[in-house]
Length: 387
Image (cartoon, rainbow, N blue to C red):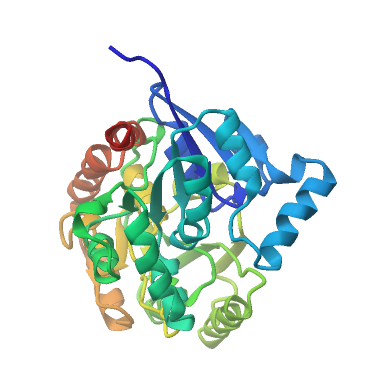
């Protein structure tokens, strides 16, 4: 029996953003049969997301950093030679590129280092990127012919989208984003008539998150029930994100919600959970954005919140219905359907005694389908099939 570990290069430019806990879980909860090596350009938030074997280009000698970055900027080559060197030095056998566009950039790196190549898609790179830069469709078709395995990070909707882009179906597998369900306390929420209904919204300020529709619904619903609303998230430096923030602030102003909305900005993962347990309902009405940006799969926060025991109101968008089975594990409206969101909020207010069965069903489903240990074992098996 061969007990030798499979060495995998995990490639992503930045290890790691606060909003990408799912990437940390993917690596951290792989079984001991897998030895991951993170190859990135720079690091962030290592106090929260440290793992062994992090190789950052920023820690290289300055000449090496500027040489590698410069050749890419001049389009002399697409990949980082730094990645190839690390892979050879560590005797890696697999390269796992996170996000489709990085998979294309890493094609030559995989070839030069003699690696099997796995590419994970997460959403925007198969929707808005292609809409705004159509040449990526051909690039992906070239990539699909050369890589060994393509992973959809959520469910059947995303997997089919990848096939529709031209990937052979036999190369596509689903490997879900995961949570550590055993470490997430299950606290079924209770609400009693007469007390404020506390609603949590948590997402980056992007059109696809549907925050303006959430606030529109709450703005109208405030006449029926006292509300306390918390908004976790913010805009990034992109103009479209800044524009979305302006729209969000305009809705808050329109319904005079200033005294009912706490805006906390981006928060560390533990704070997100602390706030979650203070709230009754999680509202997350995702949409397909006008620029082509979509969830493609499922907002990761939905999985977290389902595990905590909080009722969820969301939309029939992308793979969300595979997690939130409407009327069983949560409530789903159509996209951009403010009256539909209000109807679901009203149902929750009218039927607080029915919350328990709904949140138990959601928690059980998360434990069976999204647990980090289970998904780690499944990913390890996919790796082993390539070696």
